[in-house]
Structure formats: structure tokens, C-alpha cells
Length: 136
Image 1: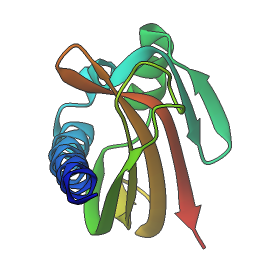
Image 2 (image 1 turned 180 degrees about the vertical axis):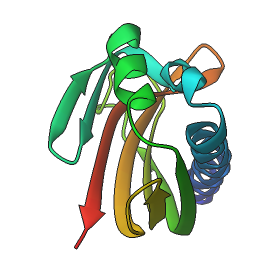
Image 3 (image 1 turned 180 degrees about the horizontal axis):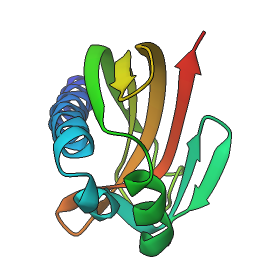
């Protein structure tokens, strides 16, 4: 029983480290190198951004992200959890929940919540699902 507990603790720690690193890179890229955003997403990812659905085709994702105004994100909280193997069979999966504030040029500061389902592709974590919502 102790071995399983140790394995679970290690899995949780790995998820936390991967989720924290992903979030750091994701929001830095979003704010400063938006043209690279499609590299974060798997080929069949789904993005739900304040009610707008974008399927994971890289060209569609690039068009969507590059058409948003310049931004500055500030994270207030982050939670990263491993997800069971049944979520995406055969792949390690992490749920990342981020909350913070974002300022888009020409707009007021808005609070937001964003949930990512990350899956490993080779040695890289990719977004399988992304849901962004303003918190009103």
C-alpha cells in the first residue's frame, strides 16, 4: 500500500511541475510571441474561448490567436492534477486550472478562468482541450 501511495505522490508532483512549467511558457508566449501559440496545441485540440469554438487545425488556431489584441496576463492561482488513464487512453494526462487577470489593449482588465487538458506527445505536453472564460 505504501508503494502505491509513493507512486501517487510522485505522479501528483510530476503533474504539478509540468503544469506550472506549461503555464509559465503558455502565458509568456501568449503575451510576447503570439505567432508561436499553435505549437502548444495537439493537431485535434478543441479551444473554447468565451463561447467561440476553434478546432485544433494549426491555421485556424493561428488566425484566432493573432487576431486578439495584445495582452498581459497575471496568474493568481494555478492547480495541476493528474487525470486517470481513461481520459485519453494510452496517454498521460494533466488537468491545469488557471485563474488570473488579463488586460487586452483597448479593453479593461478582466478576471479569467482557463482550464487545460494536457496530454503527452513524445516528450512534450500538448493541449488537447482549452476552455477560457471571463469571470464576471
